[in-house]
Image (cartoon, rainbow, N blue to C red; front, side, top):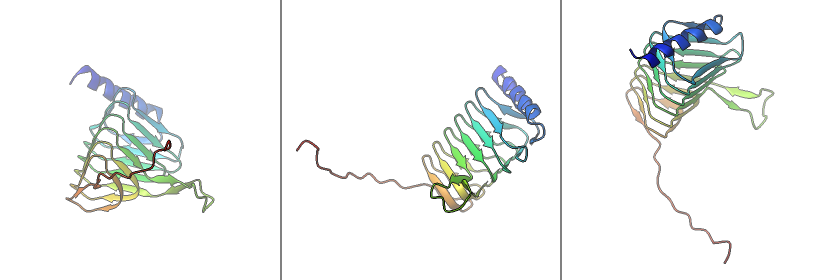
Length: 179
């Protein structure tokens, strides 16, 4: 174990002390510039054993949000997890850099009095999530699934499948402004 790992485990312990009433955890690492922010005394965070959170990750939990991260989950650099209702990440899941996970949308249409439209994100065990993936509310990802880099995920992803958004190159001609 090198010095940065030891510092990561110390930072994890400090966050556990800061949010003692909100975080229930075993040993976890939180590397440089990563942070856990809990904005409500009703929010809950459960972090399993040997969870490793790399640099510049942002984990935010508000309202009555419940974030569960099971044992041996790896969260890479620059990931964002925003929880106001429920997010569950199963054991042995690997999350690549720049992934965003949100269990809510902003109610920009104003169809209800609520500021946010809440949902859930459930990620199974042994899931591999590629770089630059966005996972939206009301998403269920089954065990052993692989989410291809750059995908936007909403809905149900069956277990033991590869999910990818197909992108086709298209060119749309337009008239130049100076003709």
